[in-house]
Structures are given as structure tokens and as C-alpha cells.
Length: 128
Image (cartoon, rainbow, N blue to C red; front, side, top):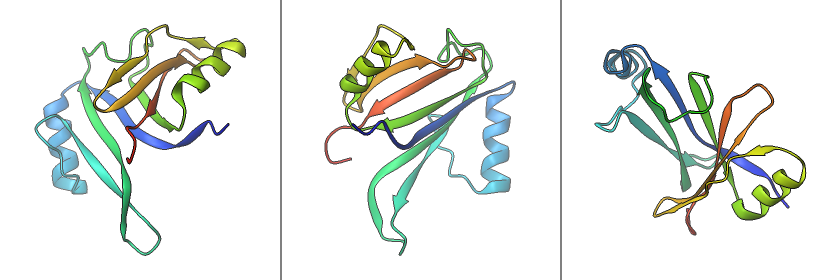
């Protein structure tokens, strides 16, 4: 079974999220959208678009999205079979949170790494 197949997103907190989003937009050219982040489309080695995106988002420092982790970031990893991976991680003794979200964006689950960082696992919907 494949485990992680790529990075689905990078999320981090900022003391002044709107100002930091503006800085990234102005100085690094990231197309920050009204939702506070950007989606980077994937391409093959020749630059042709392929299915998939990587999300990038700046949260406010007060956000509880990364709880129970105290870390100011969270990485989202793409996986092929979320439910099977969650089962294996539990069997291996990993700290997997009980909740699995099933939404229009796919399946999501979370595991806490040995340093207390919350890691998001994401199985995109079919075709993505």
C-alpha cells in the first residue's frame, strides 16, 4: 500500500495574517485569494497541467485549526487510500485522531507526530 503520494497543502499561522498575505502577494507573486490562500496547480515536466493542486494558506495566530498541536503550522499530505492508511497507522501505535471527515473535497484524517505536530491526511475525490 502506498502511504503519502505528495503534499496537498501547507498551512501556517501569522500574528497579522492579512498583512502577511499581502506581503506574499506583493513580493513573491502568490495569487492570494479572499479565502486567505492560494491553490498551486500541478504540471508535468513539460509544463502541461495534470490533475491536482497544492493549497497554501495563512491562518490567524488565534486559529484552532491545528489543535491539539501547539505548532504554528500543519502540512497536508495526499494519500491514495485514507481509511486503509488510518487503520495501519493505528495498528502501528500512532496517535490518530478519531474523526474522519468526508466532504466534497475528499476524505480527511489527522495524526499527531512524535513531536506533537498535527499532520493532515487527505484523499482527494476521484479524478483529482
